[in-house]
Image (cartoon, rainbow, N blue to C red; front, top):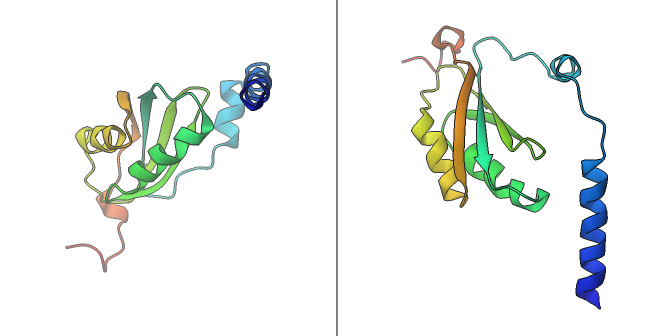
Length: 126
C-alpha cells in the first residue's frame, strides 16, 4: 500500500514538472546574472539524471574540483552550469572525472567563457 501511494505521488510530481510552461531563451538569458570579470563558465551535460535527489551528488562532486566557484544543475535539460574562478586551470577531463565519480556519464562539454588570469587578485598570482 505504501509503495502504491509513493508511486502515485511520484507520478503526480513528474506530471507537474512535465506540464510546466517552456521557458524562452530570451527569458533565461535575462534571468541569468552576468559573470564577474575574469570568471569562466562551462556547461556539462550529464546523462541519465532522472530525479532531483540525484542532483545533489553531481553538484557536490563538480564543486570539489579545484577552481570551481559555483555549480547549479538544470534537471529538465540535464545540464550542470559550472562557474570557474579566475585563473583556474580546469580541463574537460577534470569535469568528466567528477561526473564519473558521481556515478554518471558526462555528455558534451561546452565552454561559454574561459577564466581570465588577468582578473585574479594580485595576492594569488604567482
